[in-house]
Image (cartoon, rainbow, N blue to C red):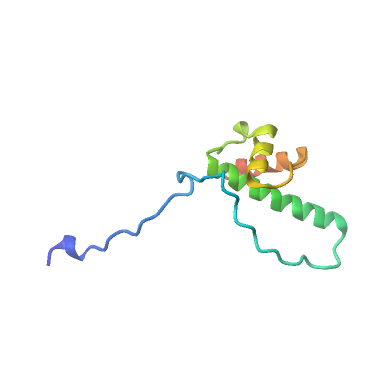
Length: 104
């Protein structure tokens, strides 16, 4: 047998940074789990803000926005409309840019 015949075929892979993502189709809903009881209200607000910022940062990365400088408030809010979440506040937009900065 030749060496080429023994070499396994590489598995098809896709890089998430380069794959086209059709955002005109709604994202699949995320399975919801109950949050732990007994926390202060501020904890729940911060937790939900972090989840929303993460969803928006992932959607921006999928559309090709990799640097925080290209993610203005309007870009983030337009992505939120496309993904199907309520428009984020200025605090959430700052958090999205911070996540994009840490993703570099």
